[in-house]
Length: 158
Image (cartoon, rainbow, N blue to C red; front, side, top):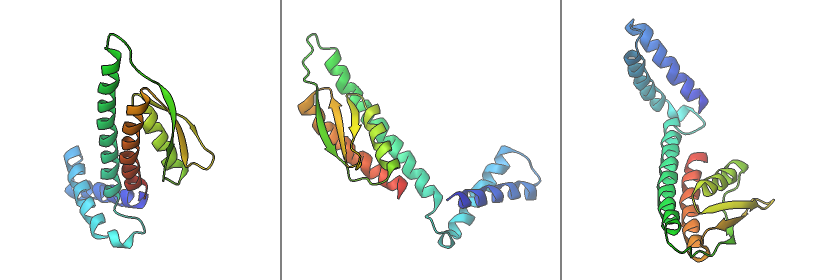
């Protein structure tokens, strides 16, 4: 993937030389031409087209943002109630991710989502212990979030 980015940057700089204009617009147009060149040569590279991973990363960020906003509204609803009616607890959450990077990213995304904190990851990296704000409801929402995050993480890393 890094080779594809370097080729794209090389084409963009070469385009600026050929246009004889040193401007950001000339670089940007050369970068677009470079995307077309790299896309045309994609079958000669061992990895997939690099913009595919970029858009998958943007999608992962969008999923995280959406889940974060929904969880924030849920937590805010519990906080502004006159009487706090929560039942915090710890539950076990299994994952299907395999690599250290994928497991760490999932743990961080679940921890950054309001209302849940990953407390421990087992040594085999298959089980998380998660502390949730309101156990019966939060367990379902964290499990749904985990499924969405796992799918988006797999798109980025594989």
